[in-house]
Amino acid sequence: MGTDKTVVLGEASDILSQRRLVHAAVDVDSLGLDHLPSRVPSDAVMYENLRAIYGNYAKAGVRRFLVARAIESETQLKLCRNTIRQQIPSSVVSLPAFRSCSGVWRIVSPESCNVTISNESQN
Image 1: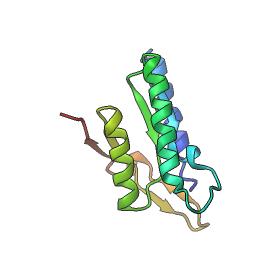
Image 2: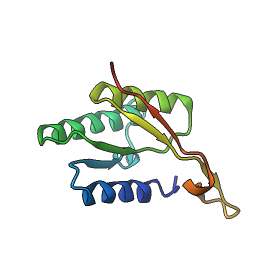
Image 3: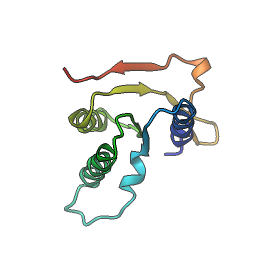
Image 4: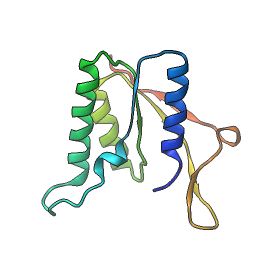
């Protein structure tokens, strides 16, 4: 789904880099670009890939991890949150998207909407 989430992820990464804050940024959807045998759930493999990538960055000393993911259902949201929470304290930023007249999905401009940030930190 082309909503410019990768553009937003890149901008957030640039801001952290300019501030010299160590971090990594991953578009989770890109970890699931595959055609697997029907018995293998693609989301499960995608999140295993994310766990492995996080582990590699963590070994390198990264503690800030930006993740972009197009969420289309409550089930996907729960799976993503649970995977990330197992690894690190997290916050979720929700950027609403809309389908334009041409049928292309776009993130609503932050200036024209309420951006939702919820703290998902572990206790």
